[in-house]
Amino acid sequence: MAKTESMIEKVFNYLDNIPRQAFWGIVLGIMILVTLNPINSPINVTDYTKTVYNIVDNTTSGDVVVVASRNQFMWCVEAASTTIAFLNHLSTKEGVKVIFFPYGPESAFFFQYCLDLSDYPKTKEYGKDYVMLEYVPGLLVTVSLFVNDISSVIRSDFYGKPVDEIPVMEGINSIHDVDIWCTIGSFVQAEVYYVRPASETVKIIDLEQSAVFIWNYMYVTAGLIDGMTNGMVAGGEYEKLMGAPGIGQTGVDALNLIYVLVIGSIIIGNISYFVKRRKGVN
Image 1 (cartoon, rainbow, N blue to C red):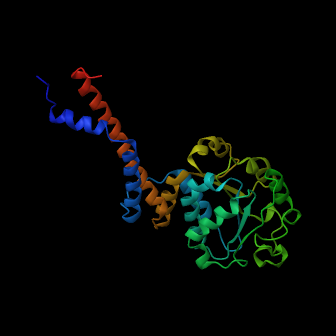
Image 2: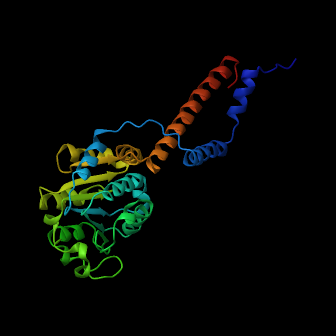
Image 3: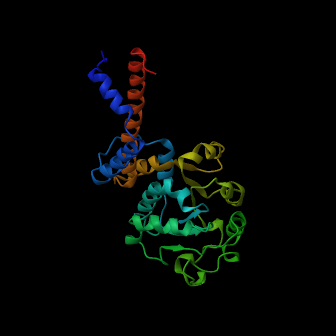
């Protein structure tokens, strides 16, 4: 006589045979759900993010912030939520000049992506408050020239207008005229090898992706950079400090629910294994 399955066995057999595509479909559904209906899950703000926030918050009229990056769009995108929150913070600062310095071929497009999603262009005027400089090939060589004499390597903005015709660039000639150097998604070689040796007073902050955070942490402890944030979660932390939830909070919501899904799947898989083992099923 055929042995009948219990209800529990039927449930676990069904779960065991769910196709992988369904799992990823659930992940996609979670992302869509929290985008449309944020759950505002709790966020613990780390000291790393607080340090970066305080450096930006202490800027005053006349200060100069350089936002630099060398990496590909896809490499930097995890830090996008933090970058957008960072730009929203700068949008509240009167008289602070911002210079976007793309020394990677895709960096300017990443900068523009973050600008388009932030409030910064709504409150600031291009050319007067901020500028997007041209891309000059050379990577670290370009940075080494930039920190000593900007005019020796940069001739125009990203759109071809000569630098000496752009009001925001007036009086900014080298790293000694810069108060904050913000790098995004980099291994901070330029900052450690060229920016810090050229100036001991400039504040260097790194809006970083998680994979590189632990790599760059030694530079924070050594005092070579002043602050660093950690991946997409830091975007939610920065938004919490700003009191304005955005895509960082949405990302944290999605991550938390996906963690629950993954952990739940592991637990169900193990229970299924032991149920089958008890019944003598391989």
